[in-house]
Length: 112
Image 1 (cartoon, rainbow, N blue to C red):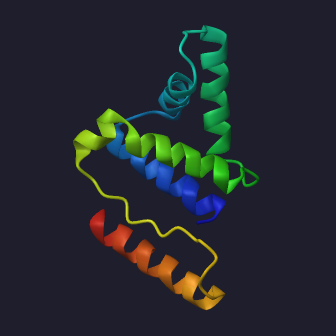
Image 2 (tube, rainbow, N blue to C red):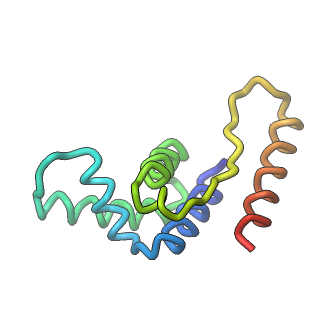
């Protein structure tokens, strides 16, 4: 998935969790740190918000956000599945595109 698609997917998940983008930043901080540094937490909150709107955010960064969200206890309690195709580079570009389209359709149908 590209940056825009990952940003959209993260925002959908935040909606289902009823989390703000700032809450996402806090959760990201807690996963990576064992302390409660208010200044650093604030920085993570702002970074998360910016990463969800910038076109230049690397897909790898957003994918790491998705991975953290999916593993969170609150997400697990929602009992949702995330049908997202991951590109591994073993298929042709045409096949990769087709697999992504199928994944997107399944996601859309599952969210209705």
